[in-house]
Image (cartoon, rainbow, N blue to C red; front, side, top):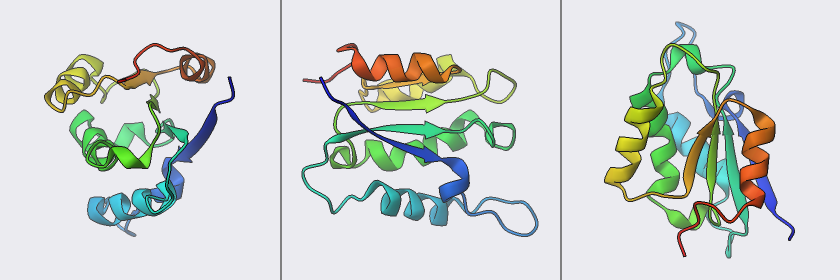
Length: 128
């Protein structure tokens, strides 16, 4: 089965000031533009690559950015994968709790690119 995948790197949407702070509202707007919410039907999955920015983002901040997709399920087909570095600022258990508030089952976090890609080809985690 063919799977269309849109890979979005944090450098493509994070709006960072000269002082090094992130403008989250502008970053969310850029994410919406990149996702192409006006394109219907959306037939691609989303992989958000946070590996180069995780050190400056907390779990809550990552969730706030990802929520732009969760608030509009028309921005992706079935699944969202987050690609993160293992480490200090991201708490995967807490992130799962945040997602469970929105009853999201089609989102997973990965520290390995190949595992994320494999997940897209599995039927695991699809809300149907």
